[in-house]
Image (cartoon, rainbow, N blue to C red; front, top):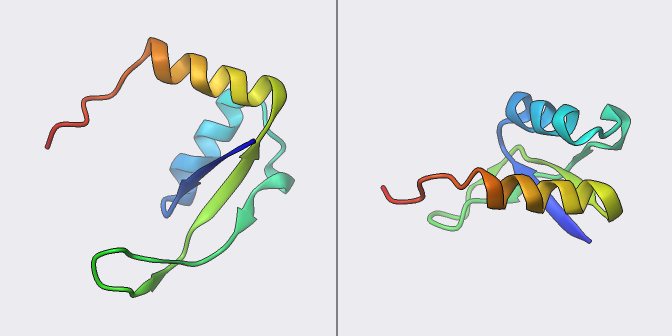
Length: 68
């Protein structure tokens, strides 16, 4: 199992649609920002099975530029 987490709910919902996830499965949990400890709204999907395999496949096939 893995979590797909974001403070951008719209972006996370789009990812969920691409992975075939039911919107009712989206979970809300505010998280602390690592740099200052301030809590921010955040949501996550629990990924298992086919959704997890698809997420990994998409991440490997479509790498994002992580350099600043």
